[in-house]
Length: 111
Image (cartoon, rainbow, N blue to C red; front, top):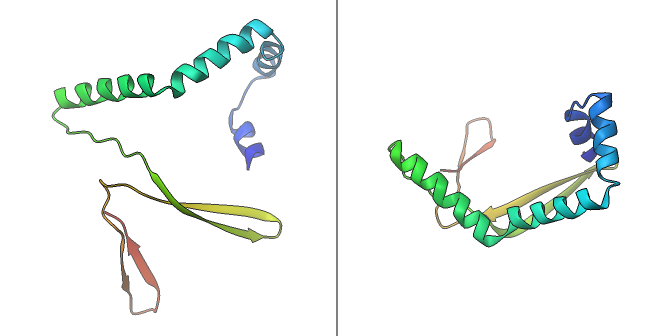
C-alpha cells in the first residue's frame, strides 16, 4: 500500500532527484524534523483548531474537531495482502445502528 502512495505523488524526475538529495542534507533533515515536531505538538494543533473554529464561526458554522479514541483493530489477510480496519469512537459521534434488509444483508448507519 505504501508503494501506491509513493506512486500517487506524481513527481517529475527532477523533483524526485531534488527530494532525494534534500534528504541527504543534514541541515534539511534537522529543519524537517523541527517542522514535524511543531506540526505534531499539542500547542500547534490547538492553535490550528482555534483558527479553523474562528474562520468557520464567521461563516456561520459551529465546528467540533473529532479526535478518535481507539477501540480495537481488525486485521484481514487475503492472498498475502493485509487489510486493517481501525475501530474508533468519539463523544461527538453517535453509536452506529444497524437494520436488516429484505435481502438478508445488514446496513450499518453512522450519524
